[in-house]
Length: 134
Image (cartoon, rainbow, N blue to C red):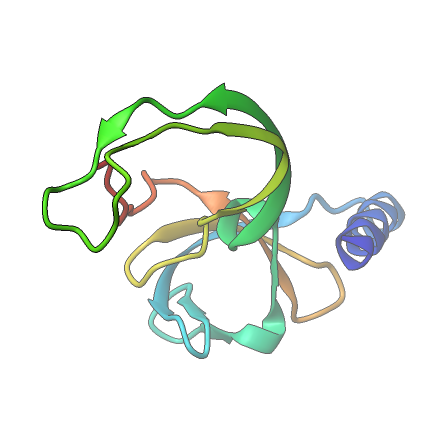
């Protein structure tokens, strides 16, 4: 995060000093490992040229929960004598947010003035999801 703040400050300073607005581009994720984003036929950005925000990468956050599970019966024949189960689920828990880019997703990038780095701000199309509710 510190690196992102420093780059945004540098971009602001360069823009004011050069009287040039920032340059934004659209790109498409071509590979994940290593991460590459294609801007056009000639320009393929590689992982070391990309700065990712939380909107385009997996990260963990803490949440607070306070609820009880519902009663449920275990399947007959299970290797246990317990027939019903219910418990509290409380406290501060860590969860993972799956925001990582996927091949084919289209992104908005900001070019860092005076350098070859791009900040990947967000997707400009719906994220591709894989999860499901049970």
